[in-house]
Image 1: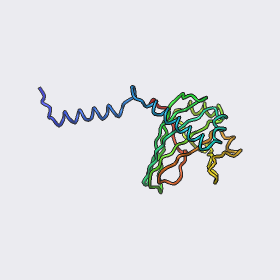
Image 2: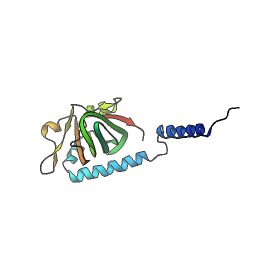
Image 3: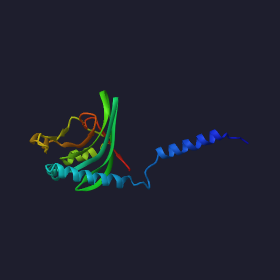
Image 4: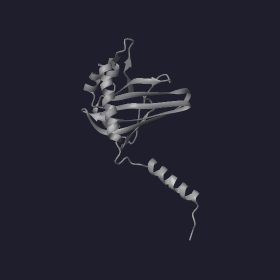
Length: 186
């Protein structure tokens, strides 16, 4: 008969609790409800603060809403957020957004962004990729000096338009280029 020390039993219990929490699949959690509430709040803010984005929404085949992305860096940095893909105003999937960066950076910030898929092909490619990365094909709608968000004619013809808003923190600028999106089960 083996005798187990108190330390070994405690270590085993701690590792089981840690790995059980880390590997949780979210069953019974309120992850989807939390994401949906944040998405709705972010869209209300976006459309009331930047009314021109309603035109993008109306023309888009779908939109990926990332209501809260947190970015931090000290030489090496990264960001993470969760959001929802909506088609015709209804959530059809949930996604995570991750990004890694190396360079001259220090600080942290949070922001929201929406990817407007302006064509059915762009939406189809996004939904059917094993992990979609934002690259050179993403165009940005930007604030002009009067605080209005606008997309020029060239941008409005792009297959994917990114709108970044609600920035707060100490890192200058935010971009979705290099961000990888993966479908999740919240």
